[in-house]
Amino acid sequence: MEILEIFVPYPCQEKGPDMSKIATTGAKANSDEALLQKITAAVAAANEAEKTAETAKAELVSRSKVVGQLLLEAKKRHPKVADLRRSLSASTG
Image 1 (cartoon, rainbow, N blue to C red):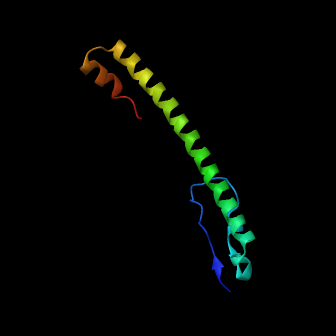
Image 2 (cartoon, one colour):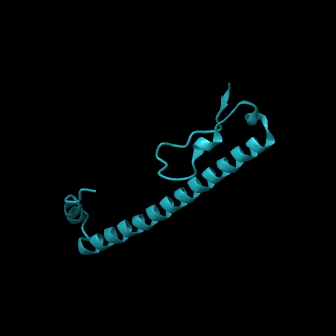
Image 3 (cartoon, one colour):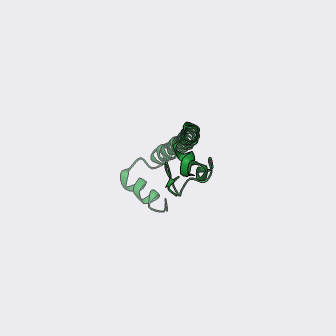
């Protein structure tokens, strides 16, 4: 009995389609229906991964903008480089 697997999801993937349904055995693995099921599951997993990546990127951009705004405010309050560095040295991030 031969087991075929299309791909294994990344361990960091918190949720998404059940990829264990992609694995098939025996004669069913050779059928068009089994292939179609594998393709459907793989596309669903890829779509979920893309959605997760886009959400993460949007969150990163948003947080980066906040950091930039805060740094600009700190520069306004401490226009001299030495003063700004001293002020920011207390930051743990």
